[in-house]
Length: 469
Image 1 (cartoon, rainbow, N blue to C red):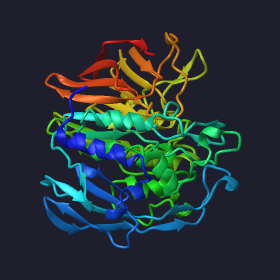
Image 2 (image 1 turned 30 degrees about the vertical axis):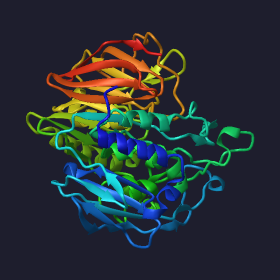
Image 3 (image 1 turned 60 degrees about the vertical axis):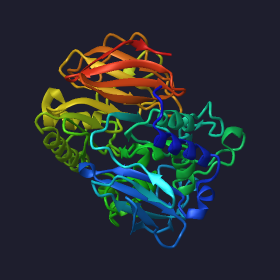
Image 4 (image 1 turned 180 degrees about the vertical axis):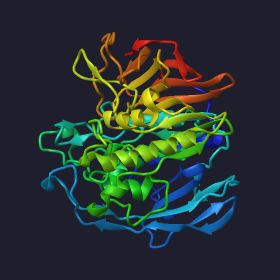
């Protein structure tokens, strides 16, 4: 592990101390319950703050105080239909105001309520990639993760260790909040846990354990299926979505879900030669979409238009594009002990219609996903961009892929795997910019290295292959 920069080390130490207390109590003196920076369209940085105060605080930009704007006021949203049964649902309570301010591009220092905020670096050199980090309490799955046990739910450790690598940027591939059902009697590991989709569950699942990493660097956030409107979509739009808050895109009114469950792709530049293209796959179904069927036509048309925008964004000459979404597209997921299934068939059906057997448009050289709770690094013998899965951020781990893979294993029709490196060990991914290209290093939860992969022209070479324990 590289030594910490002094500022980053101080931020990480402060955040670690805050983890020991509820966020509001830890910062009641400054009336700031949480503070972070998210990057949106064209890399625009937005500072966000949660506060119990009636008025938004000032933000200090290079020492100059400026009032922040109210993004959305505190309130309790009437109960709406959710992914859970009505008896296991409740209104979502958000007792804190969400405030924000777009950071000017030349900002050197930013702080609010005495808390320093990480400002973007023009050409990030080091990027942490995490995903699927919340603690699963889910009646329909019958899975009750032991949220009180850091061995069973290690997201706080992962965030702390990842922050120690001093990233310039954090990319989250989605699924931040998993506590959707009340903990039943007889499950001591989750007794007393908040549940539902309000602030208490978001605080426990994401903001409190992620505090060191939120303090270390700005974030690029992809939306997972756990942030669709029938789940954590209300919190997603209050806290994380980088665009301006829109009353028709809040997930508060189910009549607007057909709009709010989909967002346009956008690009975040990584200096003059690379970019991230963020795609909202929150509502992607499991079955292929048929544009000839009335039930599929509107969604197919929506996704096809979005992949046309991906093509436009990826078409910038001389730019390496990293495609980021939640659902694996050319990745694998375990299906029993001896078999696998491929990528998301709904999105693949649209991608094939838009781009043929290539699936991705030219310019995309690597794709980053989550959803499957594994680490994967896949190099293809066919002409397809390399794929990484970083879905091992703390949620209930999936069984490992078969090792070796079945001979017929393929993420999609016409796609041939050359080499795969994978693990169901908890951890995160770290990207480093090198003169010869980007390196991708997979780390375990304790910071020990699992494998190193070098990306070169849509191909990766990893120093280990097969299953890593």
